[in-house]
Each structure stands twice: as C-alpha cells, then as structure tokens.
Amino acid sequence: MAQTATTGKAAGSTRLDRRKARTRQALIDAAVGLIAEGRGERASIQEITDAADIGFGSFYNHFESKDELFRTASEEVLERWGRMIDRACADLGDPAEVFATSFRISGRLGWTHPDLARFITGAGLDLLDIPRGLAPRALRDIKLGQEAGRFTIPNAEVALSTVAGALLGLLRVHQQQPEQIDETAVDQLAEAILRMFGIPAREAKRVAARELPDIAAW
Amino acid sequence: MAQTATTGKAAGSTRLDRRKARTRQALIDAAVGLIAEGRGERASIQEITDAADIGFGSFYNHFESKDELFRTASEEVLERWGRMIDRACADLGDPAEVFATSFRISGRLGWTHPDLARFITGAGLDLLDIPRGLAPRALRDIKLGQEAGRFTIPNAEVALSTVAGALLGLLRVHQQQPEQIDETAVDQLAEAILRMFGIPAREAKRVAARELPDIAAW
Image (cartoon, rainbow over all chains, first blue to last red; front, side, top):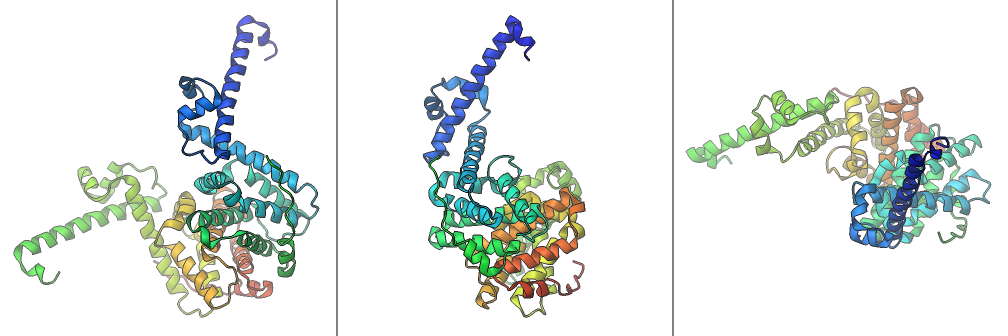
C-alpha cells in the first residue's frame, strides 16, 4: 500500500477510498442515530441520506438496501453497548457478578432502548454469529467464570446459546405482553441462570440482587 | 359428511376432496422425506413434485410457495416426534422428570435424527411460534411444573425460550464441533436447566440421571 501510494493514480484512489469510507460511515452514523431515537425501522432512505448530509443517489454506492445499512448500524450499536457494559463492570472482580450485571443491563434494553431490543429479537439466535457486540462478550465472561471455577456448566458455547435464548425470550415477552414483565423479572432470570451455571441458589440470589453500576450515557 | 355422501354430486366432491387431500399429503410426505435427507432447503419444486409423483402444475393448487410446504412438513415431523415423546413419558408422574426426560430425548436428536436436528437449528427460535411439535409440549410441561410447585421460575414463556436456546445451542455445537458434545453433556444440560427452574441441585442431578424410557420407533 505505501509503495503504490507514491504513484499519482494510487494516491488518487486512496483519497477516493477515504472519501468513500467517510460517506459510508456518515450513513452508518445516521442510522445509529435513528436507531437511538427509536426510528430505525420507519426511516426512509431519503431521511437517512438527509441525516448523513449526502445525496440520495449515493446511498446505493455503499449499501444494497436499507436493511443492510441497519444491520451494519445495529452491529455497531451493539458493539458500543458492549463496550459500555465492559466499562460499567470494570471494577467487578467476581466473574459471576460480571456476568449477572451484564445480563441484567442487557435484559433492561426493552425499557432503555426498545429499538435495539427489536433488532435483537429480529436477529434471534443469529446474534451468536455476530463477531461483535453482546455475544462474544458473554462468551468471554462465561469462560472466565469457568476458569475461575465459579461456573460448573461444562460447555461455554451451549451456555451462551442458553443465555441468548433467555435474553431473547425476555425481550420478546416484553414486546408482546409488556404487562407480564418488569425489571424484577430480569433479575430473577439472571439469578436462575447463575443457578444453572452452578452457583449455589442462595448465593445466586445475592449476586443477582446487587446494586447495578451506573450506566454512563453513550 | 355421511349424509351428503349419499347424493351423487356430494359423493363426487367428496371423492375430489379425498383426492385433493391425498395429493396434498403426497407433497407433504415428499417434503418430509427431503427434510430427512437433509435437502429440505435446496430442493426445487420440480424435485418435490417428482418425488410426490404428481404434475408440476398442481403444486400451487395446494401450497402458495415451497416455504409454505416445508413449514407444514417440518411441523408434521416435529408433531410426530412430540407425540412419540408424550408416549415415552406417559408413565412418569413428576413434572420435573417429564420435562427432563423430554429434553434429554430431544437433545439426543443430533445423534438419533440429524436431519430433524438440522431443521430445528435452521428454524432457530421461530420454533417457538409453531403451534405443534416440541415447543407447545415443553410450554405445557413447564406450566405443569409451575402448578405443581416444582418449578419456581416465574415466567413460563421466558423459561421456554431459554430451554429452546439451550436445545439449539446443543444441536448447533453437535453439528459444528461434534467432538465437544456427548450424551453426558445433554444430561448435564438437563440437570442445569432443572436447577434454573428451581429444583435443588442435588435433586436435579438425580432426576436428570434416571434411566430414559424406551423410545418406540415412530
């Protein structure tokens, strides 16, 4: 790359690449903003290109469809969300508490970020295949808990899929029958999952009832 | 039906109804066979009508799309499977044992019926929306366990989704990294889910280790 950049043509195409990347990122940022405002699904391409301050016509130079843009943007939102949870849990030493805290924050997405919750329920277990965001972090935390001898459940991948099923079930019920779920239900589910992972029942109750760390605005 | 069948015209339309039903069933049976061969998703309508021994053109008299046929066929396969598990559990009195037994049999699908396992992993959590087969039975068993005071987990729908995530995770890992999973892992997961549902750890271990009933050929 450094070599070819010395020729005029290659330097030009590098500038073009950079401009293309900036436009693409502007579209993603606009979509992220619309998701954060809860308008992710209803926005038109015109609204998106307006928000990104680019011409309507260039949308399709970067994304094949609105869906593709929103998938990319949602992954980015989930990654930011994951980093935010990482920061919130940075001071916790016990892997069981890190896991429970992350789950309790994620389970509250239905209230705090309904759009993101809808993206998650829309993606379903395909979430597990997204290399960024919540799933890789949950897998990391499950493995840390296993290594520390806190979690006795044998297979981390199966445990992750179980947790994803739990989170998706929670968000689905919240969407479909919101009166059936409150934040206590999120904490009870975190407690139940800790029991499943091998934490003794009484301790699971205690860990899942700890005060949640302050979640910084993101 | 018996009355109208005595008139010539009605008898004729009844014959036609029966022929229509037979053709429809032949299409479903063909699809069930293709699912069993692991070609459910890739088969063309031509292949399906060839396998059913009917004309290509009559496909659309019975189904709007290939997807609709395969949904119907897969539901039928899962419903047969569900009835088989019901029979295998008919003599069990404890809802916790019924649940654990059903889960342990279903978790073994990766070994006993790899094609059905592939349909299940392909469907993902959409399984929960199918009104026949495994999901409604699991929900029934969870509710019976709640009513009997065996399961303390509060929301049956969320519990069901968690169990689905667990089963899907198990089947996925079995498909992708078969060396990581054996039948002991299935039983350990059943035990872990019982703990999650509120069964004390020691008892969960005992219930999930009981001898499995003989599974009749279906």
